[in-house]
Image (tube, rainbow, N blue to C red):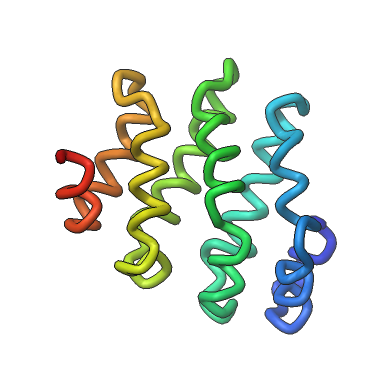
Length: 143
């Protein structure tokens, strides 16, 4: 997966992301991997997918659906501080992107907020980012 991402070419990354389960399956095992490997993978994902300006929105949404977001949120409870920081950074950037997560995706963001534990600082930060930038989610979250 990393070798495809490193090309930084949307014509290569796009079809890889569109292959159901290919990239998303990597996220399921991250909690059991070596912390340095997890941090390295998350940095690559952030740089080559999240921050990639020429990668179509629908490709990013296909990858960062509820399944992958929940696995990223699970990393906020990791024992390694670097893993927590890498997961928090990628989640903050994803969830603060109002172009990526428009009003139609508010149910996804609301489900994410409801699944997180607001008393834990890394998770609280992600919830606050979502609620600040997505007013429709904020209203639903409080009701």
